[in-house]
Image 1: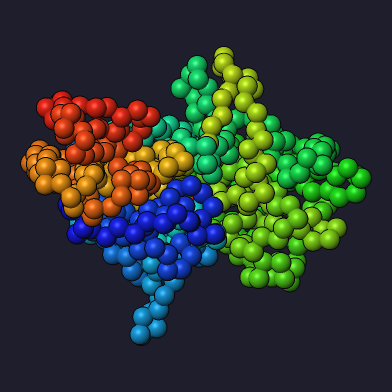
Image 2 (image 1 turned 180 degrees about the vertical axis):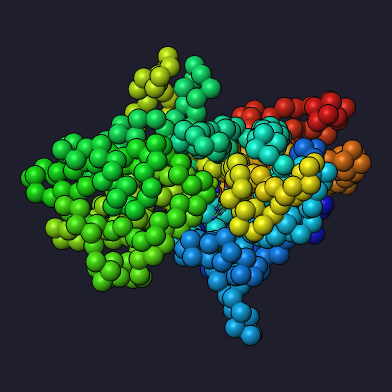
Length: 570
Ligand code: ATP
Ligand code: MG
Ligand code: MG
Ligand code: MG
C-alpha cells in the first residue's frame, strides 16, 4: 500500500465525548467516524484491524471444529416470543415493524435463530455434536452507549452455539471452546485472564468471561495469584465485603440491620423461588447525620442461567414497603413487568442521588427526597458513581476457603462462554432421536466474542503519550516505510521502494509513505496510528550504509545495514 493511495486523516484533538483513551486515539487516528450514539463507520484503518481480528478468531473456531454460517440481523419476533425473550430482554432489544405491521428485532444475539435452524436440520444422534458460529453485526440499545467501540449499540460479535446429545457432551464442547478462546486471545497478542462468571457452579451451569487486562476496564477482576481462582468481582465470594466497598459515598456507613440474612424476605420481595443457591443480605446504610437510610440487598446465586424471570417488578422503598405501580411509572417512565435477561445474578449496587431511567437495568432503583429506593443490579452496567467507588477497592484481603491473598485488577469483557443446557432447545423443540429411536432434547452452549470491542480493548492495553501501539497480529499495517526526502532524492526513492517491494513479496503488510511529508509530521502521524515497526530511509543514512528501524514499543531505534534490516524483520 502506498500512503498516497490510502485515506489518512489524523488530528491532534479528540472530540469532547471521547472519555477513554481508545476512543480518543481511534478518533484522532481517523479510524472511526460517529453517526449517532454507539453507531460508527469503520474507516479503512479500522476495517483492516477488524478483519485481522475476525480472521484470527475464525481460524481458531475452524480449528476447534466449529462451522461458519451467517444468520440474519433482522429476526422475526415470533421466535423471541417463543423463548420469552420478547418480553424478557427489555429495552436493549430494538424492535421494528415491517410494512405489514409484523414485528421483528435487530438481533442482539442469535440463540433463537440458531436453535430454530438446528431444530429443523438435526434429526438423529448421528448428526451431533455440532457447533455453528457466525461473525455478524449485533444491535443492543445500550442504556449508555459510550467509549467508542467499547460499548457500541451496533457492534460486531462472533457468536457460536454448540449442540450436543447430553450434558457431558455439552460440557466437552464448552471445554473445547474455552481452550479455543485461550488460543484466540493469545494469538491476538493481548494480555487476558479467563475469569469465573459463575456464582457457584451449581445445577450444572458453567460460565467464564475472558477479560482483557486494562486499567480503564469497567469490570473488576479478583484473583488469587497462588491458585486458579479468578472471578468477576461482581460474582466473587464474600459479597458482603464487596458491598461495604461499594458504598456510594464515604459519608455513608454500613450498619447491619436486624433483617440481615433474611433470604426468605428477599425472595419474597423479589418474587423469586428461594433456591439453595440464593443468598441475600439486607443492610441499612446511614449517613453522617443518621437521617437517611438505604436498604441494600445482595443476591447471588444462579437460579436460571441467562434468564431470570421475575413476574413483577419488586420495587420497594424504605421499610420494604412495596412501591405502587403508579410510583414505579413515575420513577421509571414505564410499567413494572419484566426484569430483562441476565446471565448471572450479581450483587447489588446502590444508585445514589440519581434516578435510574431504565427499568430493565434494575429491579428497582432511584432516590427521591427521603425515599431511598433499593437497587439490585441484575447483570447490567454499573451506574457511573459505582465505577468510581469500586476503584477504591483494596487488594490484599485473604482468599476465601484457600490459602493466599486476593489481588484485584481491571478488565474489559471481550468474551463470554456459557453452558445453556436445554434452555432454548426445549422451548424451540430442538430434539433428536437417540440410538434407541427416542426423542431427546439437545443440550446447548453459547460462546460470544466482542470482535469490535477487542479493537478498543487492545488500544486500552497498548498505548503511550504518542498514540496507539498495536500488537503485531492485529496492526493495520505491520511495517511503515518512511523515506526522508522522497521528492528530492532518487537514491532514497529507490532504496525505500526496493525495501517496500521486498517486504510485500514476503507477505508483510507494509505501507510506504510516499507523500513527501516532513519527517516530524510523518513520524508523529505513524506513531499515533501505532504501526509496530517503522523503517526510515534517508540520504544521510544511505551514505553511511545505514537504515533506521524503530519498533513502536522501544525507546531507541536501531541503525542497521540493509541486510541487517532483513534479519531484524524476519
Ligand atoms: P457487557 O457486560 O459489557 O454489557 P455482555 O455481558 O452484555 O457485555 P454478552 O452478552 O456476554 O455481553 O456478549 C458477548 C460479548 O459481546 C461480550 O463479552 C462483549 O465482548 C461483547 N459486547 C457486548 N455488548 C457490547 C457492546 N455494547 N459493544 C461492543 N461489544 C459488546
Ligand atoms: Mg451487556
Ligand atoms: Mg457482562
Ligand atoms: Mg457477558
